Image (tube, rainbow, N blue to C red):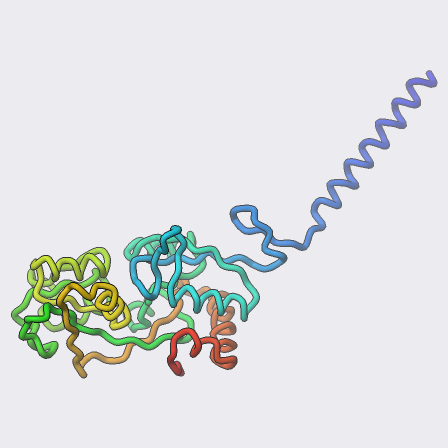
Length: 265
């Protein structure tokens, strides 16, 4: 009988200890990322990109996603107090990934325009760009209008693509739409197009990094200034407000200008 009582008391003690430990296990205030990494209590946001757009976003020799856009987002995250995890989706898959909430926001040199604003929300602008024409050094192209009877390569569904469609017509067979901007430039170099049109930073970067390829750039005043923003799922005001908080802080402390060498209003 005495043994039975002792066993009963030990059982009660074990149950109480288990309950106490479970309670302690749920009292942590730290936040972990999706990979289990401890983020020190900071919220982690997943960021989608198309890492084929040097110098804005690209893969370095070690497979890390780097670039001007990435530096900017890192600075925004630090200023607003959150962590980031980058995922390389490619340009076209980026939009459904955001719609399906696979990512919290997208950074990929995305121009804020009225068409995109119908489907997505945007942060405040953080970078100013414009379209630029890239041609062979021997080309007679001197303006955007000179492309009317030419074959023109672009990255599909970018503002460069839209500008060329406005000039040549939406269904014009002379528009060569490539999956990435480097591929669009390759189409021109290989003779499948007479010119390539894309964001100035990317085209200038390509030209600098390929000095043996005889190319020249053509500017045109008809290209309007474009403003990049961080793209967010429609209606997600919480994320937009958080990003804008960070953008405002790095504008005020000079970090944004340090990274971009621009004054962005």
